[in-house]
Length: 295
Picture 1 (cartoon, rainbow, N blue to C red):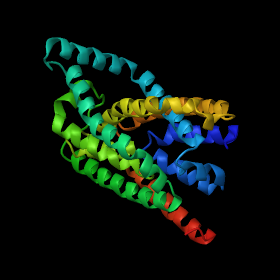
Picture 2: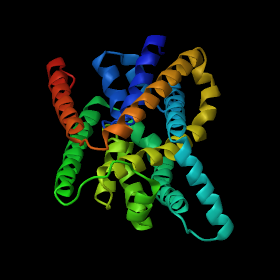
Picture 3: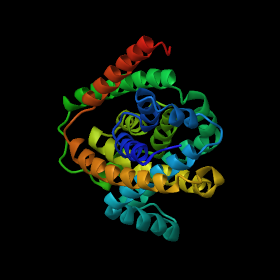
């Protein structure tokens, strides 16, 4: 099953790597493999196991941390959404941002519900995660190149607002960002990373793209978690619910501290460090797997 120590490590890993553009799903596969937690690794690719409930709790905790951190922004977005329904007009930035988030959530939500389980069981393997982690590093390098090109044409602002995102992003481009997120269903591809990069290529600067990515992650992660929350009360979780809850607490705390850091980091920093990490880590683990005789 899972020990308290493993639950805490996996919780911290989820809370950090879900928001850092380095793939939480990929790390949830590779870290147990690296530490020889064979039972935990095997449970990830089973059709039925306690691990699904564990992931659900970790995701709900992460989304809760995002909701708390961006509570003021979400309050404006929610008021804008219901205001637009009442007036039947999208006549302010908050309402527009609400509909942009909805448009970007739908593609990933539909495809995720349809294929997440199959993709998890098929690709939650170390070699697949290593390959996709390398691809993720290449995607981040592409985003870093875009940042450099953009910085030559304009100077970045100091504060990101809902007005900036609403003014720059169209509904069509929001849908494209939502479709791009489907890549995160493959272990090794980062949801935040691919959202940030697709956001930049849709007209946002890297600060706006990062903020939009974190806002967009909240309903997607929350929705996926709440839909599968009943699994937490299944017989598969008997004997490990307390470990799962401890892991969820660790994930929530880590996610809050991480988004607090990244919200400031992306005001003037780039994706290059994360790209280098993904490329280096994937190559190092590939070499390790070859030495171990696993590949």
